[in-house]
Amino acid sequence: MSTFPTSSVQEARAALAGRLRELRLDAGITGKQLAGLCDWSVAKSSRIENAVTAPSDADIRAWCTACGAADQAADLIAANRQADAMYLQWKRLQRTGMKQLAETSAKLYERTRLFRVYASHVMPGYLQTPGYATALMGTIAGFRGTPDDVSEAVAVRMRRARVIHEGDHRFATLIEEDVLNHRIGDQEVMASQLGNLLAAMTLPSMSLGIIPAAAAREGVMWPLEQFTVFDDARIHVELLAAKVTVTAPGELDIYLRAFARLAELAVYGAEARALILKAIEALH
Image (cartoon, rainbow, N blue to C red; front, side):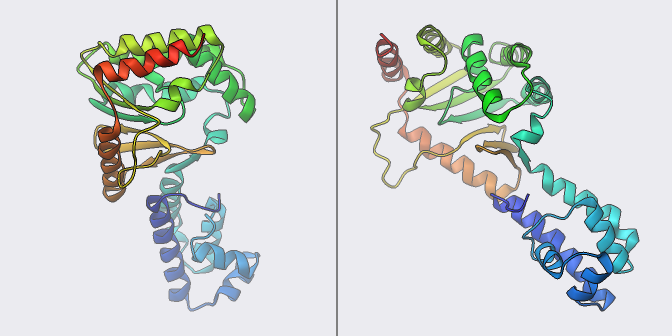
């Protein structure tokens, strides 16, 4: 991984790079000398020290050894892995299929009291029907070339979705109107999914808003990447290539403010139902 898409990740990388640079300076050696001791290029030393490239565990061990600070390698490797965990490529997350990934988030869903979800591409997972989830995951597995365990992953997702009916969980859900019209699966699958969305609106735990495609966004908020806020402590942002975890207070605040502005654009109740019914009618 050579680039870092959020400030949280970049700050963590910069802090690690700064610590490595201090070790080199304390050792009294130049970047060229360090490269020679580590048996790699001067350019590699520069990229690591300037937080352009993330070092591997082996790189950190070699760096610390060259600087006479082998005893600090373990702590720096731990910091490096923590930064790496903020940005996880889907290919890495799904290398054994989708079931395991769905299972790893189950406990997070169980302990979260308030979910804030902004859906700009597809239906939120906890509102997906089995047919919709199967069609969606099948497309993802095909595109990413991951092992085909779609049926097992869908079963896990359906079990995880029980949180909307059980316990004291609350859900503030915002969906772009385009999601209603973006067809996943065939006509029957979409009709069932949209019908499920209408039913979800009646749940006491659910606040569901639809952001009209024609909503005036000047000075408010443009469509963003899909994201989920777990209470006020953690956010998962879904990018095409990776999932980014946001926990830094400053970035949490940015997403929470964005969610609040998007909520102002949404329609609720009868107006939201009208948009869903319009999408159902468009299927025929």
